[in-house]
Image 1 (tube, helix red, strand yellow):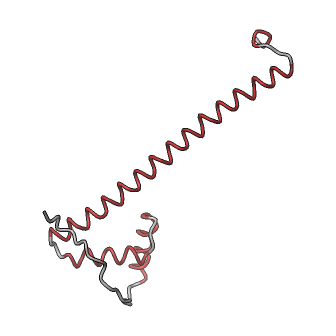
Image 2 (image 1 turned 30 degrees about the horizontal axis):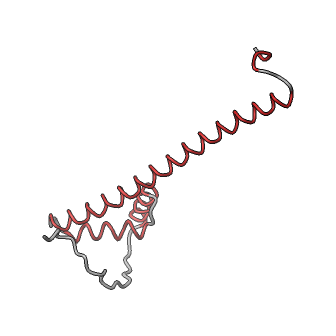
Image 3 (image 1 turned 30 degrees about the vertical axis):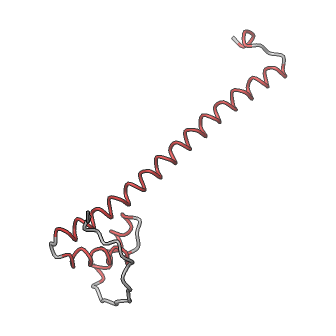
Length: 114
């Protein structure tokens, strides 16, 4: 069964230079900043989207690629959140043990603090 997504190696690339009005460069730079990307990457993506010229298969390929990237980022974020939660739990536990150690070394008991 074919998914319609090319599995071959990426085709060779070569540089292309274009001139844009300063206002267009500013808009491109602002969009890149919002996306945490480079202006070159944003321009490349916009050009590719324009070259798809309404071809639903090419647009679907592009959207699937974006979706896979977002899913991978979501998994990375979930793993980071779980690690943060585990670190927080460990810190709370260590803090409680340290407090108990201080009480024991100072001769205090829990009833004396109340």
